[in-house]
Length: 256
Image 1 (cartoon, rainbow, N blue to C red):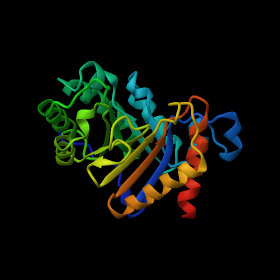
Image 2: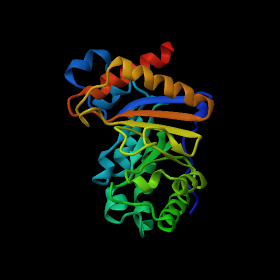
Image 3: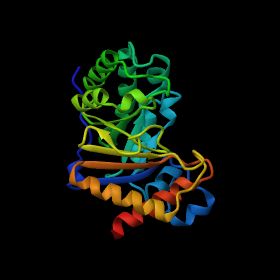
Image 4: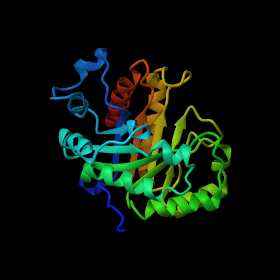
């Protein structure tokens, strides 16, 4: 099987920074900050350059659904798609080949607007180097583009895990809140950086203040020296803070 090629980041910039949310829902209080459009996704894409599709974690989508989403957004907009929980949580990365085939057949509908893949691991999944190496080899046999992994077990933050991620060109997510030392900073493959902020102190609910977002902007800007591409995704969607934080960070990055 020939690996699928990613969208060409060089069409965007020498170093592209994408800021977006987990999902494209726009709270009522934020709607006047977005442009017009024929759908919620079209309005969302009028201001933000990427989105993380989380629904794929729970259920399959038809290729036609992905194609419709791709047709809704501007040419330089990019999607990150979260791998199914059947792979990460149920199978725990084992014997995942047929499920990966199905997943990539479905997401092919995004075409050149498929920017990266996200693999979130369960907190109970410790690093098993042989099993993880086998899985990443299968993944890389199907996808040449950027991959971000959000591990949540302490064993994934040591030298052995770092070497494994480097070999397979997998970026370790910089998460907030950070569960373990080092989890707040990007790791793994240095050519790709992916921040995933869930809300703090209350996950999924809390907003980030401008001072905190300014420090994040400094970190993202500093990554230009190493990474070819950086993504920042806000997952604090429960009270609608994600889009406001994304717009604020976007403004800070542009002004900086």
